[in-house]
Structure formats: C-alpha cells, structure tokens
Image (tube, rainbow, N blue to C red; front, side, top):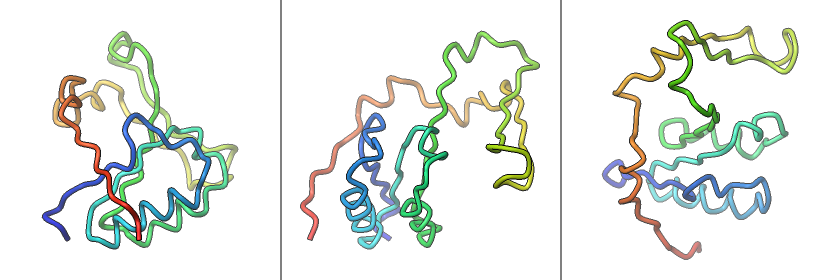
Length: 128
C-alpha cells in the first residue's frame, strides 16, 4: 500500500454512469498500484444495475464506494428526525431497513467543512 494514500476518482461526483469501461480501468489501475480509491457517486446509481461497481468489492480493504445522499437544509430538522435506509420494495434486496438518528449522524468526527476541500489535489496519470 502506498502510505495509505487515497485517490478520489473525480471531484464533485463527476461519475455520471457513462463510459463505465473507462471508470473501471481507472479505478482498477489505482487499486492495483496500492492506492485506496474512493468513488463518490449519487444515490441514484444504487438503483441501476452497476455490476462492475459491485465487482470492485474484491478490493474490500482499499475500494471505498461513497454513496452521496443529498439532504438540503439538514440542520433545520429537529432532534427526532431519522434517515431511513430502505429497500426498493418489501423484502426485495435487503434483509430489512436501517434507521439512523439525524442528530447523531451530524457528529463532528464525521463532518468535513467546505473550506477543507480547497486543498484537494487532482492527480493526472496516464493509464497503461
């Protein structure tokens, strides 16, 4: 592992579901080089058939699928609000549902202020 460096595939969720072969090649290449690799993608891609994305699970310790869930005005909800991670239908693909208290999810140890993103470095490297 290269000093536990993490490579984020593209900033600001550039993954759009197109050119899957290119995405797969880029991410697999970085993983094989020993980088940890995060793919930040919108939750809408969880409902489509992304077999290639699930196939990267063989890199269990180094591939980080980051599912982005947009909740505008998050801090405006009261302390009783929960986030429910559901399924597409009753007993369809998950063993059940998970509910998380929104206030507990907003802990400081899990928070990154927008200002901290200003120092991100985009890595340019040709794939071989």
